[in-house]
Length: 582
Image (cartoon, helix red, strand yellow):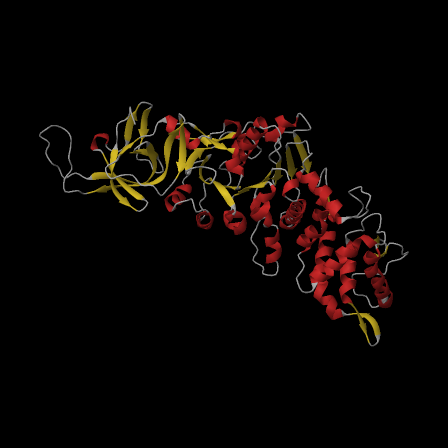
């Protein structure tokens, strides 16, 4: 380590903890070398220790004074001994640097140990660059900048996105700007990326306007304005996720309704449903007393239609037809006195029917979900759940032949109380479609989930826990099908623990809530308690990064987005502008 003066030496090894004495000539703060002057006592600072042909890299974890019996001060041959406190530094080994074919390479390894008495030196810029810069410049993305030196910290995009990414932090500290800067770099550098953005607040379009010059670059969909999701395009899995039926009674009735929905039509005047070739409705959802025998006969005929491979209807019925089939399939029963609708059995499924009615009557739901029926996918086989769902997934998330590079899905018109159900249904459908296609028919996709706590919530209800965990398969298994999640949230404590635990790289901005910090500590094995305490004091636009995407935990200043997303702080100087008099 030529051109550098040692600032300390190893005096103790206790497992992974290394203790060094700091030389008194430096007073334990800075060390000079050929690249300049480096701080050596800053928490989380990296330095090197000689170890033969390689350099061990250590990270500072704490500092302290000890009261030795004597301290040797190198002033003159007649050095006198003074009882002065000795500065000590505690550190852990994070890896080592070696030279291979003339190039420095960093290997993460926390099990190696230095020799007693080995001297510590500041790292040069070349060595720091070997730790934090990617060895593959074609896939390098600037993650941020060193707060002290300003040196850029690059990361291999494959390392970053090979496991899911969690971006956490309080509102107003730079999550959206950081995400936008990464998207902008990807769009500039790569030829055929695939990025899908769930934009909860409608703020990302302004950040990506320069890329909208060509239709093939950027696709923009505003749910509820230029696009409505047809209810039938959500498919069997999506509708089950949306309606959350109970397992014992409601799910069998809903499954029957979904299986036979393509063989009925809706009569809007009478709010009832009948077979495709009927002139009047025979199925109703209000458990009326009349017409039970006719409904029973038609129901038996309906059960046989899929088996006979009868041609289904040419268009999907109104969403209300689902409630009619649920009600009749479960409440109709044969008794000694003939067929009747059972009030008791109807009571078991009435919560599901009420949920369907509430959605039909909710204008906010109707503004984003098309409940009127019809057709969405033109195919030779009419009314195919799979074809309808596949077309919706291709529209939202793309396919191998898709030309656009990024798709912004503006979700600001989705009502927040329905967002977990609607987006949960869409993600459940996407998961099912991914697994159906298989690994050979997938295309690498980055799915950015802004404010993910709105729809990746953990459920307190045991009844619905299985449904809430169903779409978590995206987090657990989506990686195998080319999907990388970018989960951004200001409340990690409200997020599903399954989703958090599957994230490989964590970018954590300022968090102050004790519950949020506990979530970070429990789900991220790379973060130490000391670093956790420092998260609460991070300034704006600074974050701590740890996980598989970076070789060692590092604090960064995040890069600026240009242009920035529409997420700036409110400007209260307008209060001082006088109003114009009419």
